Amino acid sequence: MSNSFICRRRPPTVRARRTKGALGEEIACWQRVLDKEWAALKMGRVSITPCEEGYEYTVEVALGPVDPQALLIELYADPQGAGAAFRRAMTRATDDDDCEGRSLYVASAPATRASGDYCARILPAYPGVSVPLKNGRVLWER
Image (cartoon, rainbow, N blue to C red; front, side, top):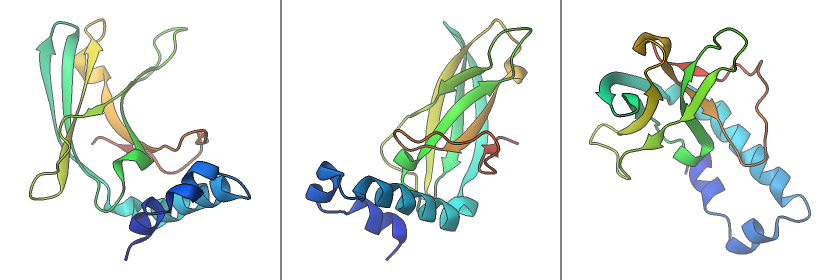
């Protein structure tokens, strides 16, 4: 039985109570699953199509045994001038994976930049936990 299964199947009383270290235990479990399964994450095809907002990006992602809620799949572009970086969470297009375990994620981006300025990436994500910038767990689109 994988850690991800065990972590997701806690009794509701433990999840709801979040007392006596339960939240810390859940975060530690999340980290253990990512330690064990990070290498299984893969990004496949990326398609870019024009849309009303500018561009629509569709990314094929293989999560392996990692729960999609343990991750943030986002569209990213470096800052321009004094502005902030562009970051937009991608949404899962379907609830089911294909026969090879891949899911499609989509997001739109404005056409104020070239389509090649944007790229997809996968980051660890857990409610209330800040992932440090120096964290080695960022999977970039290739």
